Image (cartoon, rainbow, N blue to C red; front, top):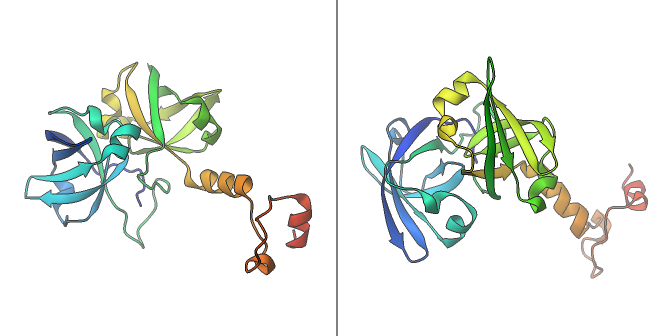
Length: 222
């Protein structure tokens, strides 16, 4: 679990093909202070497991599923990436709840510098557009941001100078791909609405779950 607040920018040191995936070595500094084998680190928003580390770098293994859904397979030596360690319970949640489970890739269609910020517009695959909520949370390349505008399948976020200067968002270009993770709460609500739920009294029955309806809500005391 992550917050979407980037701790540092790392650099890809090597990319080794492993079947349909890659073993990726990344040079870092701050996040290596307490790293261990099996730790989770968000790399441009994708949760990856540390399989090797030393004083200057760490390795992860991006499998086929990760390569298909994220931009990790397109990394090259020298690429800079956003890094965040898994959050600790009891700490402040400064961003929003981020799983590090990238939903899809988006396409950068516009970058506009304002007087005090930057506007970044991204086109989202149509089947994921329903997860974009105006003024709702969105994770782009591991960065917790707010959807300032939503127009069909296009979302626009406003980026403050600190975020612009301390992440790789400043290195994006029109036409490039970014990793997107939508708010987990909306995805769970949609799943329950589409699949159906059972009341507590029916949990041990053999009947099929039914959808949420006005009648069901009344039976539950709403």
